[in-house]
Image (cartoon, rainbow, N blue to C red; front, side, top):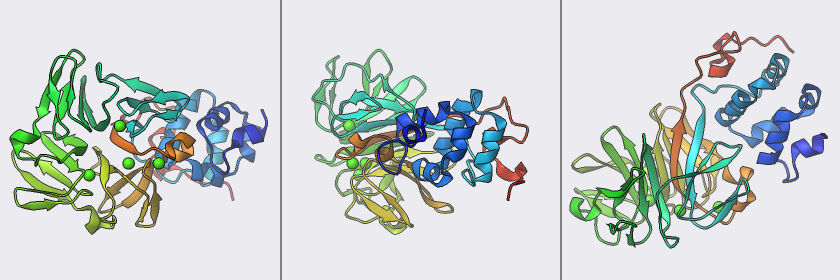
Length: 325
Ligand SMILES: [Ca+2]
Ligand SMILES: [Ca+2]
Ligand SMILES: [Ca+2]
Ligand SMILES: [Ca+2]
């Protein structure tokens, strides 16, 4: 395998194929790879997961070389995978993904998520999962397989056997014509965003905002107050276990020095600010014309069976020491 293969043909970033190649090249070849190239390619947390995947083939000295190269600064939590949907058919890791499909992207490969027999005319615009239950919203009023009518202001639940309405927009006072375009849950609290500005329980909820619902509505994330252009629409959200929000928007922008496109996922909290979690176009060119319009971050706990004595797998860098110049 030569290094041009490893470094890929898509310009300065590593695609999925290149990453697979990277995981299979030998340690001498790896040493020639520019740490900056790798850094540009993947976010630290995601690449950290790749190192987990590769730990059977990556020997200690290679990991040490990467650390000495400054590749990994911090990756404090368990690995993440992304459940996502595009707004138009996209080819992701050689898999054709329709707009009504949800897939799991673990960076190396893309696999389908079961939402039951959705009509091809449907477009999934919001998604969340809890155990075996998949919660989602659709762009247009749709009759589902068992006769249930889902409107764009509803959240539907699929349990593997049948559909039900989990959140009824009409019953809870969401104006007709407003679509749910992002949905997440934190315990019993629902987080929602809409495709238009709405007034709910006296709060003006802009399309880039998140409102929480637990019997009543209240603005919980005011995006423009955190630097997001009010011309953008928040179209994907997932509450992370560490308190941060993972978010996607319907267009490109820059916030807190972080640039993003509509196929990207950014994370935010008031302490750490903004960072990119998922850089879609670095993985698949097909994301270019498509917008990531439904999102759920699948969090895995940190590994408990350590291989590295210094806890390298956990991303806790406190015990690491740099012995190289
Ligand atoms: Ca979609
Ligand atoms: Ca929105
Ligand atoms: Ca988006
Ligand atoms: Ca795009």
